[in-house]
Image 1 (tube, rainbow, N blue to C red):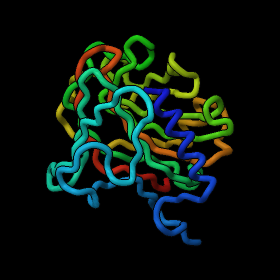
Image 2 (cartoon, one colour):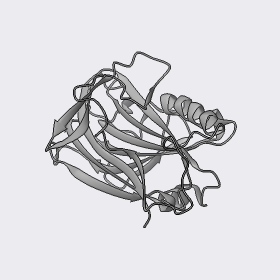
Image 3 (tube, rainbow, N blue to C red):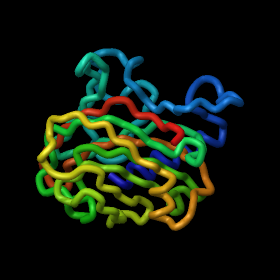
Length: 233
């Protein structure tokens, strides 16, 4: 999974060099209070696979068992994994010091059996959001924070991926107690970055990735994601 995010982060960083932004027009002088990533409203109902405006990974055998559905009167994305690892990424470019708060909603239905992101042999998660801060050369210097719903690692756990030193996991939710319920999460990415790296980032955010995987545990996973955006404090 982490290899995928690094590859996608590299692509996003190169795109940022040619001024790819959040939308068809650059930010105006008066910065908005929120910086949208995705609300799924513009995605076609029932669309399967990689959503419009997102990119897939370039290795392995991802199934992209994704579908745009309506849940509770709003469009969301439904993710499934059966022994595979699937990641999608969206190119962005903004200063997290201006919009430090990441907010998203999610619902996990099935956790990968025995998953624990802190161990290489069990690095599977039902729901993940990666925030990538690309630095040249991206493959060895990018800094990535991943917010996850883990199977066994306790809430509040912060650990570096054993597969790559570029990714640090932050366990936001854990275990089966709240399966099937929608939750809205809010994280101060700037403060989390300072806690992990001991300094504020000197680089912009370059990509947001979403992932689901169950390949290491040879099991299954299922989740939903709603709106994702950044906002001012």
